[in-house]
Amino acid sequence: MMERIAEASPRFKARITGVFYLLNGLTYGFAAGSVRGKLVVFGDAAATAHNILAHEPLYRLGFAADLIAAVCYVIVTLLLYDLLRPVNRTLSLLAAFFSLVGCAVMALSTAFYLAPLVVLGGGQYSSVFKVEQLQALALMFLQLHAQAASIYMVFFGCYCLLIGYLIFRSTFMPRIVGVFMAIAGLGYLTFLSPPLANYLFPHVLTPAGALGEGSLVLWLLVFGVNVQRWKEQASAAGMLIRN
Image (cartoon, rainbow, N blue to C red; front, side, top):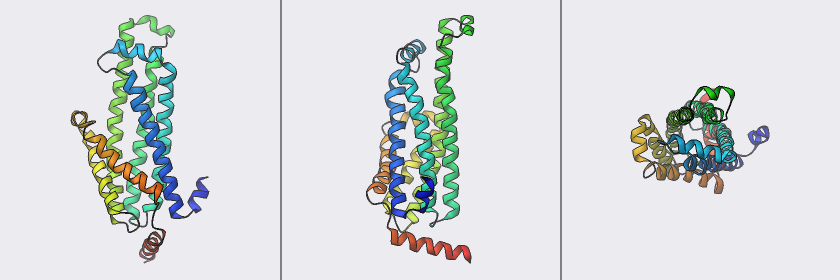
């Protein structure tokens, strides 16, 4: 499938990128909002443990959704690298590097997400600990998962900022989409200070992210790219490389 996509027209690649970007947003939003947002009660280990055990299938579905979101974002990263490479190959490669590192951190963080199921699962070792201690351990792993989320959001912030610049410099996509993506990137970079990010979320970061990434997804799905201008910029980039 990836070989066929690689040989496809730029407009088709752009629309496929939009499809996977949309899937990423839907699956990550489900995992964060419909699962963690409902089951995890930070500051109340007992309530969190009860929610996880009472809704274990939903909790596991959240894990699957996180993995799907990470895979979709890897595909988005590779496709956007190919689409934006004519603008600036070095910056496009750097953007892809930040995104792939973020995806790796995101995927690895799922180990912390699964850990509460192991802790609360009633294994033989659990008899060594009191119930309250097991519940506290489960919540601690979820807090570590949240800390890992802050780390990969910083990488995605760098990615969005670079993608925004590349779109702004391109001739085949609207500059305003690039501006919106850069704003989203700056918003995600506030996770360098988690207390600041928590203060701004959801009143500032959610609208900024929706405006930036949402406008990009919408444009990719509906319009794709201007093929003629993409080919002109790609041709110019090829001439520069040969020289």
